[in-house]
Image (cartoon, rainbow, N blue to C red; front, side):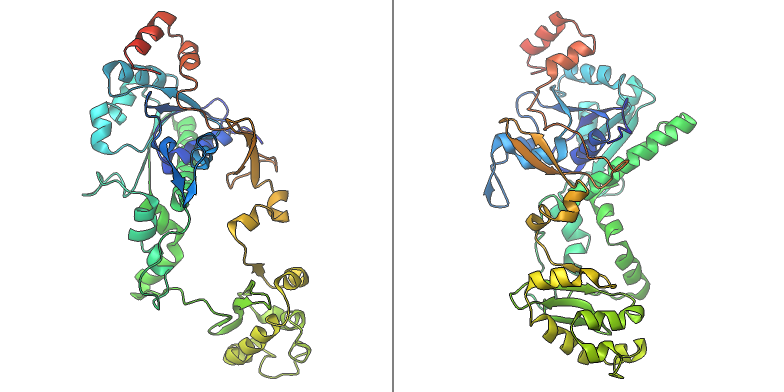
Length: 409
């Protein structure tokens, strides 16, 4: 893949998934991303024992691999004056400083924008936060389960009112990865702006704003009308008003989603594929035009439900490939990892894990020149400390003294 960020150095002081995932995207794009970790504890995610109820293998920790592949890890205790001095020296060679530390901690550690700009006036300063870097809750931390899913209203809208309570976020780091992509895009724009004007600017992305942008069309509508809609309970049948929109169960319990948003041009073809020849031939006046189809959507829905229930999922998945309207098979996330179309578009990449065995990961959503991503595994904690410091021109005597003082690993 084209290394569009080659020659760009990113200095990352961040933990967990949200902000580090931005660094992973930039690394995928060719940037030299140097991850600063505590020399003893490392990133908090390295201590993860279970994920989604499944035991984590420390050498194949996917929650570390996903947001940290392709980076270098340098262990520095930035709570010490010596560690802070190292950060300033690193910053002189960097284009971007990337962090998710809260304001008070940034100030205490002397890594806020004024500190980094004192070392390098041209550095792009990028922050990721739960709720934004302004306002009364700028010091409040959060995760995607709180800021992206719960507080934003996304979880509420995705939970049927008929349930006793709202659904919990079912996918780990769901908003984190989306937000990380937003940060990476913001950094790319800031670098472009700097190349044109010479001005280094600050970039801010929050999990809350990520959620609202993701749900933006609904939020816009709700603010306009003052009314909120929520998803309905699962069933086999059409959405009110358009019988070609909805989820339909197959004979073996699978589900096919029809999403023919504009049914007019597809009435005959859709009914024909569903095995309803009379309706497909427009012999049934209830379904012959868009207007009558919409008026008689419940009758059409009953027919469609019955047709889908007669044959298994595999049949419909193959048979509907020639249908002109839009549809999709309901798949699990694991199903997609073996999906022919996903694999054809290089959506799965492979790296060599720390144990020497192959490890499959998801690539970022942007592809350049149709080429697959070339990257490496996430680094071990502090794996590149000595090599990076020597690369920076730091003498070995100083490196040994910093190690003896536990400033570096």
